[in-house]
Length: 101
Image 1 (tube, helix red, strand yellow):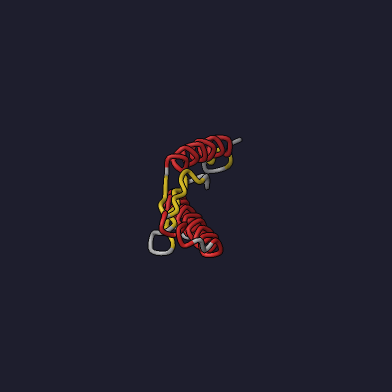
Image 2 (cartoon, rainbow, N blue to C red):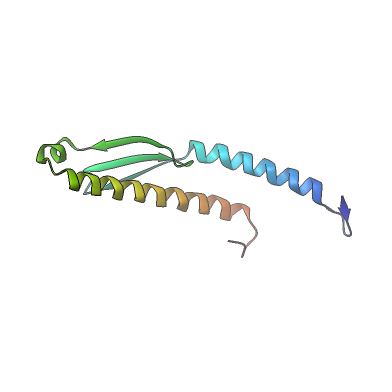
């Protein structure tokens, strides 16, 4: 469907779908690192929010403070999630016209 001025809605929708597919691939290949407790708990998360690695320091486990391990794990996961969102926003922002994000 063409609008006045040569605006082709179908072409625009096809281009948007291609950009979405490309973004999905890029985000799946993006991996962020985050940690908590000075590195006692670290997380690697993909751009599609899948956790691919979780590391807990043996020293932390030796102390036996389960509550601290849980708190640090949640903190590291939340930080990784924030970093993925930041990365996504940065990548999307580069694709959109100024002022839309």
